[in-house]
Length: 131
Image 1 (cartoon, one colour):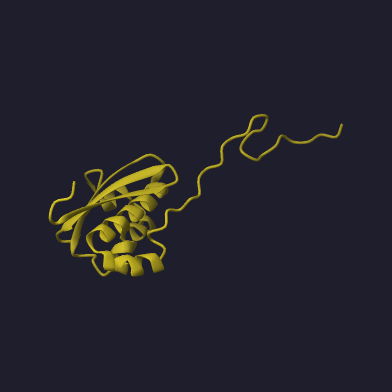
Image 2 (cartoon, helix red, strand yellow; image 1 turned 180 degrees about the vertical axis):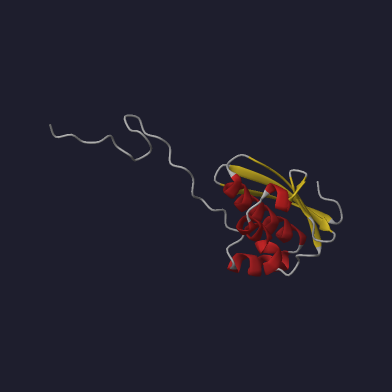
């Protein structure tokens, strides 16, 4: 899958999955064939995505191509961040210490709790009436 200067990583968060490819370039990030500022309009989400690149001082060294699906916009941003961190690790194993220290290699295990029968949601109960 990877060529000489192309590295891949898969990131996951909530129900979102992101397939990430990084290659040497000018620091252009595209998500689902669209620029990052068009797909992730909120600056905080863009900041989350750039986090692994900033930690490893490789922001302007790599072009990042992402295909993501599932979940919401925030979950997708977390998945992209996880995927970029894994792709950087695939490229250079010495970055593991910096990425691990900032918690970028750990998959966030929090998922939506499933709805229970006889209730409105996972934990919400119907209003109790004594009389």
